[in-house]
Length: 112
Figure 1 (cartoon, one colour):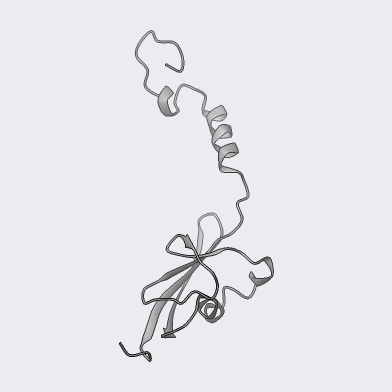
Figure 2 (tube, rainbow, N blue to C red):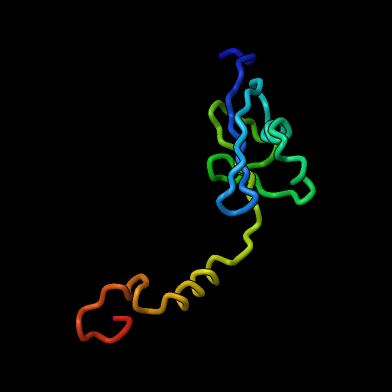
């Protein structure tokens, strides 16, 4: 396999919910995740906070080599603990319409 072939990779970042920034790149073979991030232009404003980075949902180091068709993802910090958010949704919905409690047999006690 020749080492001078170009790799096509995608760098993705979501600065907030429902907003996606996606950059398609052509990089030389042997490029690292950090080189892809710098080429995308998405990394410069985030570098100080040192966010986690992954390829296809798996965390990787910045010196990891990229492969053709990789999707490099920049992860942001969670603003709410998922467990707390679930509890708050459950309280808001009530026990009648959530999960196991949505379908109960007639005459059964709540939660069973």
